[in-house]
Image 1 (spheres, rainbow, N blue to C red):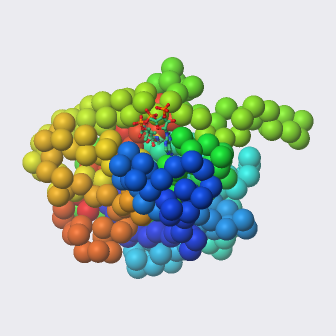
Image 2: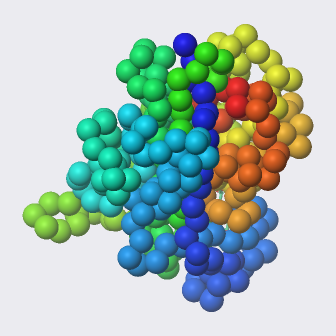
Length: 318
Ligand code: ACO
């Protein structure tokens, strides 16, 4: 028994913030941002849009594209770093907005690796017979945890949601998955705030040592790619499409070069989305599916690296 992608969906808030818009807010420029990151613009949620709203729109599209209805969903996992509330989970809120009840629903907090973690968990539910149709969503409103006066971080991120339905199948879908974490790097990329006595203690904004993240990410992406390929007894030549977490075009291209994977097989949406953390992989996947780039039967390598540090890869047949 396998788990296989039945359908995908995504949603981007309507408001677009370009690099030129940002240059009016902080001391930066389109040239600097594009040269260092490959980002030109990102979408930003309105004040009354929360992660579960974005997740709902993406999730409904994924369910419809799977020829299913919400009542068919028997597991919901939301990967998010920017939940609606401290609790209940965004997955529970999404379940209610979908008009269903009873199935397990929970959030995964693995920052930018969240979606890769979520697929791996859903795959285990499905192959063990505990679920038939899992809705997996990456949904983020990073605009809420950015210091819009800090040019070193606010230019990098965006809001959005991507989703997939992973269903039980006789045909191979998920072929191999590997997850990792090393909490020794917690301070390199974090939001070091918490809530106590009705107040936020510490900083509620993203803090990052960009150089360390960059170096670590390229190494981790390469290492985990080789790990999943070995587990599936496949080689780089078998990868039709490489869909890494969309943090920065330089990280993505450096990884492809290390793997000797032609850049034509790298799916990149970072130019128009920015870094949408847990949402970036399913957003890129859905765009490539809709553009007719990715076709049934092709092999996809999805990879995430994020705060924690966490990292992981999933190799699957679409
Ligand atoms: N506009 C203009 N100048 C800027 C900006 C900006 N937005 N941000 C920083 N600078 C300045 C710095 O202050 C510095 O000036 P100084 O030399 O006078 O001190 C100069 O530009 C160079 O700064 P660096 O930090 O050395 O720039 P670098 O080439 O390392 O690029 C970047 C920074 C883009 C953040 C890079 O380190 C990077 O991409 N890191 C990866 C981070 C990332 O992708 N994080 C996402 C989350 S993690 C994940 O998703 C995997």
